[in-house]
Length: 204
Ligand code: MLT
Image 1 (cartoon, rainbow, N blue to C red):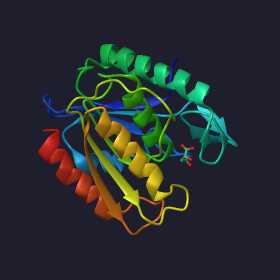
Image 2 (cartoon, helix red, strand yellow; image 1 turned 30 degrees about the horizontal axis):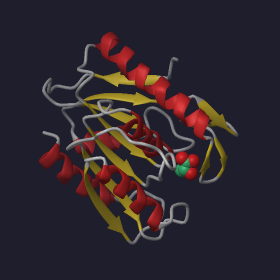
Image 3 (spheres, rainbow, N blue to C red; image 1 turned 30 degrees about the vertical axis):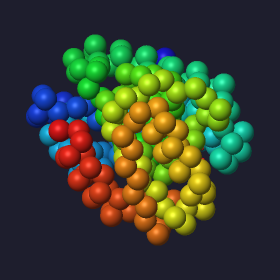
């Protein structure tokens, strides 16, 4: 399945390709400034979600706020995984060296890629993410570095939801680092700076 997307070839061929996944109502270019802050030399694949909710792009359907259409999420996760594979052939980047940067709905589908596949992502930065699927058997994610940025006062995501996500990933072997601000659902500069430091230690 096709996605609207943007690919920018980076100067550093040894750097990972950054997979950018926007929040509800965003697009493939939304997180470009974040990629610039995290690794200005890396190649970038920015993707737009194929689902529309009142004209707002998303990566999968939800039944209501915070309640996901799990069957749709599973199917779209599979589609996104195939799409990354196709794009790696089209643009010539290493499929096995992709790091996701996702915010909100985009972080949730990035989380779902980790929930489904052992080798979809080399690492992930999940800003304001939820548990993508409940009672789900994760693959072994041995040593995969994951950064989770969250707000203690996020009105959409209770703290224990993010903590459950972190625990599930850890139980499957991922090396999870959590960073909490006192903020809400909006992304803060503080978190991005922390993610940047985490990336330098763990991803390059
Ligand atoms: C979701 O539906 O993925 C979450 O509720 C976050 C969002 O509002 O996009």
